[in-house]
Structure formats: structure tokens, C-alpha cells
Length: 346
Image (cartoon, rainbow, N blue to C red; front, top):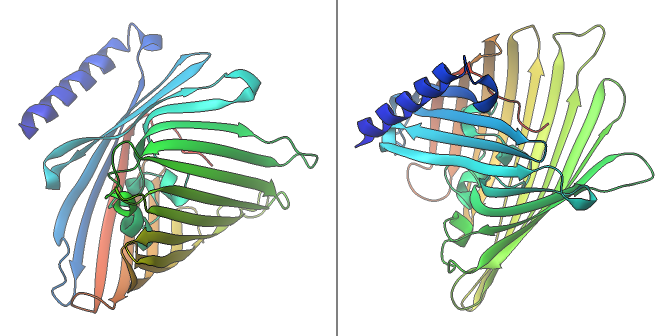
């Protein structure tokens, strides 16, 4: 059945591409992102090994009219023999009072890192807390989102958004009922310190019922990014410092489970196509206040062009649950883009 799905997707893509020659304005921009990797691990840890074609993501993006835009991302996952809707939503651009809204299945704005699809992140593996608290590929859910800019006397970029989502399939909320929505509030702030320096920081909170008994789970998050990019003398120099924190408070019978996670990521561009980075990563589990794991990674990235990225990541992991308690991993990842692919939110 899976090969039949591949064929259908391929035929549809060819037909739409062929139609672009005569109906260019009626067809969406189409792109394909491939994620090919090789990974090895020490100490017989229970993780994938060898060559992996982890994912092929097909994107369909189009401005419907002056009032709406469509973004759809379909993921073909060979290891799982699955075709999944990564994201599929309509953005309403011109609501009253300068509001915008998203309707569909999308990645909510809890923090910053979660907004980028896994193949396009600067890491070969996601930060631990995204997998532990939200699932293998981070946080994505079906619902609605409303956002707007906040006027202020300093003329700064300050944006708020409120999301109402289905939460029963997420790792932190998997025991709640389908009618128990997940509520998310995010505040984003961005400003230029100077023409070479910028800072972005945000605050997030999310809550829902933990189970059918009415217990609640609340998540609190903070994200911070500092960017340095010289405009005149350092065309091929840049530096990024990024950090995110999550705090989980989960009510269960006769007790509350408090857990915590955070990461710190540094990346320096030292030539036209080369980047060096490091990551410190720590996370608890939403179902335990005692179980924790941590990683430290070194990453070297090479960009042959804007359509390819090659990463080599050396990673040491430690945890106080399961065996082995400590192991080393090496990831080699090649990500490539075919066709059109729009930029993610800055």
C-alpha cells in the first residue's frame, strides 16, 4: 500500500508541475526536502543504526487571494512505511483590527525551535525536551490560532498569539479526553540592538486537563536568541546563541509531578560555507520528577549551496534510567531541497 501512495504523490506532483507551464498562477509552489543520514552508537543502545532515509517532505504553498494563504507539508517516512500530514493550514491574512489566524494542523508557537521542521534545523537530532514533552518530531496539533502585533511607544516588534488545539495525542497530555482542548499563549519580542546585533525572546504557557479526573497539566516556556551578523566587513561571519527552557507541572492522583528541561545552542560561521556549533541539552520526563537525561554535542556543518546542508554531529548522552546509562553517537546527515521552499518565520 505504501508504494501505491508514493506513486499517487509522484503522479500528482508531475501533473501539477506540467500544468505550471500554462496555468502558473493557479498552481502552488512545490518543493521537496530529503533527509538522508548515517548514524552509529556505542554500548548497544536501542537506537536506529546505519543508513537512514528518515523523511521526504513535499511542500505545497500558495497565496489563495489577498486574504488567505495555504501551506501544506506531506511527509513520506520510509522507516515507518507511512505518509503523514506534517502541517496543513490556511492563514487568514486580513481579519478586522489587523488580526491574523491559522486554521488546520500546524506547529504552535511554544518557543522558537519547534516552529522549524526537523530536517531543516541546525542539528541532526532535536533537543531532548521537544521529544520528551511533545513527541518524536516536536509539537504539532490540530486547531486554530489567532495572532496580532501589540502597538507600543518604542516601535518594537511585539506579537502575541493564542492557540486552541487538540491535545490528546501529545506526550504530555496523552491521557486527556478528545474534548479537552489544549490552550496556548505565546508572547514574542524582537528588536535590533544595532545594525549587527539582534535579540529575540519569548514567553509561552500551555495548559489542559491531564486525565478524565480533571487533573491539569501546565507547561511554561521561555526562549531567547541572540544573533550577530556584520553587514560590512564580515559577509561570511555570524554567531547565534539560542536557548529554551520548559517547566512542567502535572497533577496526578495524590501528588504533583514537576519536571524541567532546557538547552543551550551556539553556532559560529567561520567562512562562506562552514559553520561550527555546540549544544548542551538537559531534560526530565513529563511522567517522572526523578528521571533525567543530558547530552553534549559538537556539530560541523557545510553548505555547498542554499539547497544542500551536510552535518557531522558527535554526541555524548547520559541518563539515570534505562541501560546503557552513557553512550556516544555519531551522526552524518545530508539535507537537500528540490524546487521551491519558502523561508520559515524569522
